Length: 186
Image 1 (tube, helix red, strand yellow):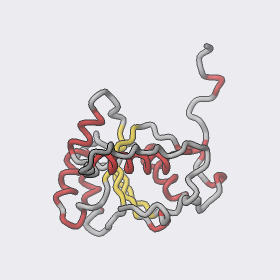
Image 2 (cartoon, one colour; image 1 turned 180 degrees about the vertical axis):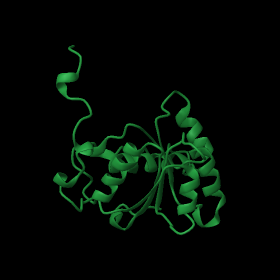
Image 3 (tube, one colour; image 1 turned 45 degrees about the vertical axis):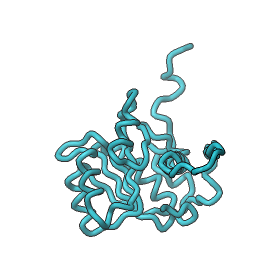
Image 4 (tube, helix red, strand yellow; image 1 turned 90 degrees about the horizontal axis):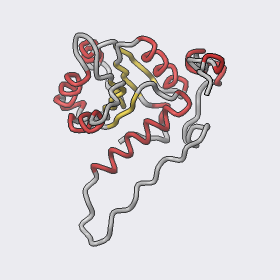
């Protein structure tokens, strides 16, 4: 179980073949004090896991050499890694992709492009929604309690404090990809 009060102690492995995605996600997590290691494919990711025990793994699905589906199987087959949450961080956002991700054994599902200001909140929501959905059903006649969504805001959750100012984030992480001048007129 992840301790959301102590995210500065987290060790995260991010595996993604797209260098820009890898860099932005790593920069945001490091901004919040997490220790981050990165890999550009599943084979390299598995190699890192030989000497690095992460708190969380963020895993792209479509990569060269070894895709995220195969890496997940191998991670879950390792006794020492079975309790490490693995979140699919993917551009696979078609109908049915979410279901397929969870059926494969992922613990969370986030689609790209990520929302930099809410990445931590989005991770928490993805993991808590999955945990609530997989929790055992209460054996009573009462309906299960509703899962409360995480409040949406421009600020990180109260327990999450950045270790750097927003001025220290990479430009790609804080500037929009398209300026308002480039948007089509409505």
